[in-house]
Image (cartoon, rainbow, N blue to C red; front, top):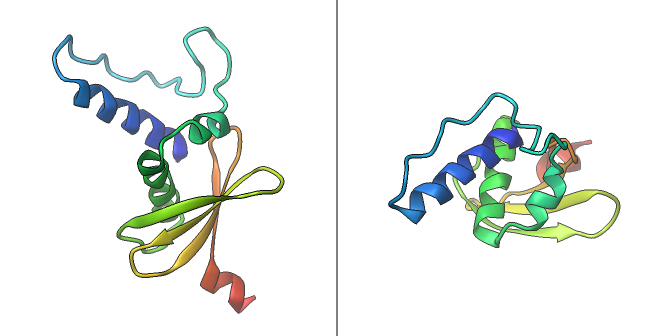
Length: 115
């Protein structure tokens, strides 16, 4: 899920650069870097500027089947693993935990309160 977001974000960044040769199509081996080492998606998310990180958050939230039209901000929750609190435009908050392999788990604040 998140892997597709990173591939899409990379294509958007390349398109924004303009000029040059057209980008080669992405390979199906998105979890392996050119040097053959596995990618660490947590490190990649940590390196993103806030706007691009919010794109990762909205993709994770939507992929979880939760309605969210826009992520207006996200902040890292300190603790074990890589966990963010993302706020949607409608005021709803969601917790997004991102694993090193790029998989994300999303808990809606409303769903957690119902438990």
